[in-house]
Structure formats: structure tokens, C-alpha cells
Image 1: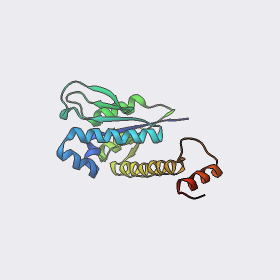
Image 2 (image 1 turned 90 degrees about the vertical axis):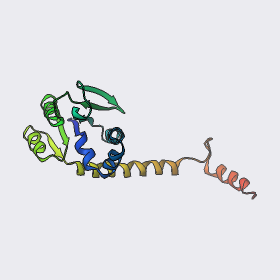
Image 3 (image 1 turned 180 degrees about the vertical axis):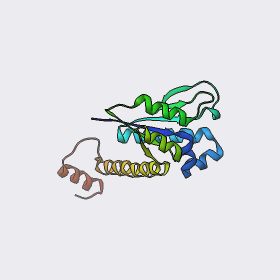
Image 4 (image 1 turned 45 degrees about the vertical axis):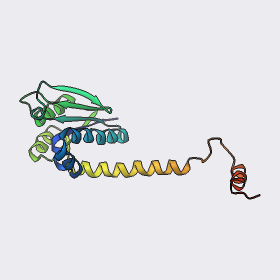
Length: 171
């Protein structure tokens, strides 16, 4: 069985998704956090390993790695672009039992990673996929709420009907 890995060009996706662009206009850190939350939902639904890469030029300093909502977040080193880091990760993670997907709308980057054996996913395709996952999760939650018993004590249908009649003042 193959391990699926999704590498996300963080700022590219933020610039491509309308929701994240609007958040970015007010505060970039909030847009990053929202992307991480959305990718955590993606990871929870698909089971894929998710790594989001952000360019260092917007967060100066040495390379930083952290886990947030079970998603790996990488801020590149100074003078290293997210594209360069993603290319290195594709090379490092590649293997017979690993399928790497890269989410970016940068056409040049798509060709480079495709040549290394990774599959490309445009930022728009990822957004559509995330929206579909949201609908699935919402449907599951709604179904669970509908199926949830109205009593904390398990009752047979017959006893529940009697209690309901009593509640309504009927005999």
C-alpha cells in the first residue's frame, strides 16, 4: 500500500483561495492559521501526510518546522524559496511506496515536480476537493445528530413512545 503525501505551497495557496486572500488582507498570520486548519481537516479525512511549506522571506530567520493540528508546517531558511524546499522534499520523500502530490498553481514548479515523479494539484483543485470534504463532514455530523437518541438512557421504541405521550400530557 502506498503512503500518500501532500506538499502544499502555503503562500501560493493563500493567494489562490478567495477566503484566504480576504483574510490575508487583514492579517497574514490568520490566513496561514486558516490554511493549516483546512489542511488538518483534509488530513483527517484522507489520512494523507500533509506538509505545508511557507517562504522564509515573510517570516525571517532559520528554517523552522512544527506540527500544528497534526499537519507539518515548514518555514524555509533565509534565501530559500518554498519552491526550492518543496523540490528537496519531493526528492527526499520519494520512494516506491510513496506517492507525492504537490499543491501549487506555479506552472514552472508543477513541471519540475512532475519531472521528479510527483503528481501536481493546482490550488483551485485542492480548494474544490476541500469544499467537497467539508460537505461530506457536514453530512456525517448532521446524520449523527439526527440518529442521536433524545434520551441519555437507552429506551425501546415502545417505552420512548409512552414517555413522549406522558410528556405531551396524553394517556
